[in-house]
Length: 287
Image (cartoon, rainbow, N blue to C red; front, side):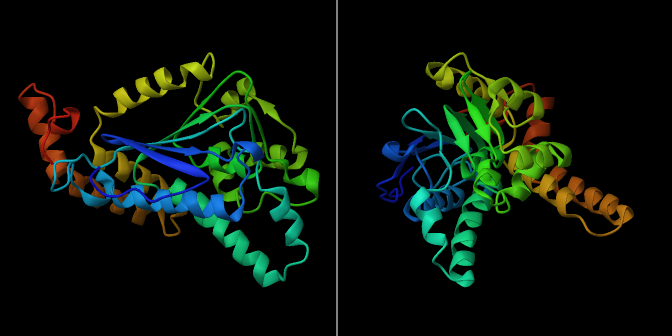
């Protein structure tokens, strides 16, 4: 990517062709989310979203650099994310309702930016993912855990609610599991997290994160990048549809026609009939 990457001190962004990797790097605090880290992650999510194929509709920019198709979220150190910073939580008691709402809105913007990111998002989760860390996990499209991973909606242990992360966890695991996890507020292991849908796969160890995520990326690259982004938008539309089922059916007909007539849809059909890879499946493809 030819554009200048934003400078951050508590996380970092690395770009390799169509793949962006955001690494939380507040190791001394187990990557707990304070105001600065929240703001930095959100800035990097915004930066990568603007430079994605899903936003630009192009595979490459004017300099020939690839636009982004995959976003990986991971953390340095022993733990993925210990949740909200304890000092930030303590300070909330002395803030006005309006100030606390501003803090909550900042956190929600982080989660929604990850949830709605136009790239396919992958999380590599080690150690604990508590509270807000579980929120991050719930906003990702594909989550890879390691055997020692522990995830918890831990807010009730502090007498509060997982309200800001609630919409994202609820969509991830459904009503019954969200109720159970938020009331018990206890940690679930990797196998249970896999069973209830919080994670997608379990690596043998953190050393295997690259190979497991690499296999997912290799599979993803055969899918049309705009189709990937539109599939995410379709899920959002189905989640929030408030009109009649008949109107939803009509909307899907229009969307299907739009995608079939798109440049990507025509390229996919042509490549199939001509028995060749589509342009998005080749690193040499033109956008």
